[in-house]
Image (cartoon, rainbow, N blue to C red):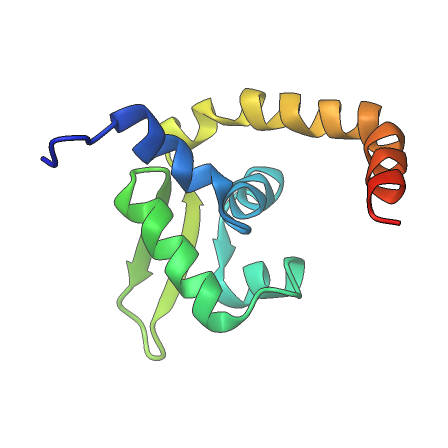
Length: 113
């Protein structure tokens, strides 16, 4: 491990990216999903970023990837128990954003004139 390694920062960095929280929330709302379904539910994500995000969330133990031995192969994604344990915290962020969105947008507008 690096000398200045901070495990908390390392884990929280995962949720500072553009797609991880949205991907987790989408899987929570829909349950088991295939790659194409996720792409349709998050239309502005590129296939490359969707792949990178899913692989990273899988490596962190938040998303489960199940491959079915069919032709063509079917792959499904779902939340692990660890991923599900994040949902109340994501819900809290969503609730906060909905409650304060007008104030935040007004403040942004005022500061970006």
